[in-house]
Image 1 (spheres, rainbow, N blue to C red):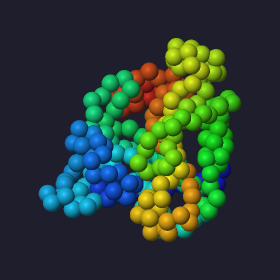
Image 2: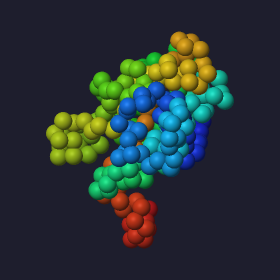
Image 3: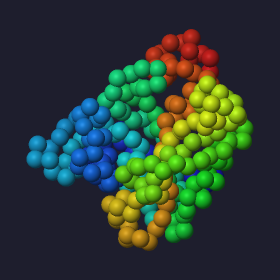
Amino acid sequence: MGFAIADGPEVETEWYNFDAVNMPDDHPGRDMQDTFWISRDPKRKKGGGIVLRTHTTSVQVRYMEKHAPPFRIIIPGRVFRHEATDASHEHTFHQFEGLMVGENVTMGNFLHVSQQFFSAFFKKKINVRLRPGYFSFVEPGFEFDISCVMCDGKGCGVCKHTGWVEIAGAGMVHQNVFVAAGYPRGRYTGFAFGFGLTRLAMMRYKIDDIRLFYGGDLRFINQF
């Protein structure tokens, strides 16, 4: 579909991980309970800390600083969150970010791309719906759901009989993010989306515990 692959560092500056993607100073994502901090500027100089990146969104501004629109990229990579592990949560996991920027990019473009991607990934027709949601780096922002792959949207225990499964967040790139990358405010539009790559693998292969991916058990690995 014409998307290039972008990459960035896992050990990231506070600027790219938080400030450049429009996360306010008091955002809970900056707390020690959520982020692995390597160092923090004692005077809280803007963007002066070092973290293990909490999302692949940090690569967006790095890429835009060196590339002019139009472009479309995907950003797969490992991210880190300071949280307890259980069957559906890990402190280290993989995300998959998408970004498309140009002069006339709309949410209609996003809906088409996402429907095509998920239908190809799950090898069946997948419908997508959007619900309002807040993410600091997009405006407007959306939670987006896909039709349940287990029951084809008819309703089952996996989707809590709604026919839909929440999969990720998305939205139109906030103009503050474009400004942080050096673009003129209001000239470009773009959509961004991000989701847990591991979660998609769990859904496709019916794996019920995320910790199996990182446990090193050859009985699990050899299935693939």
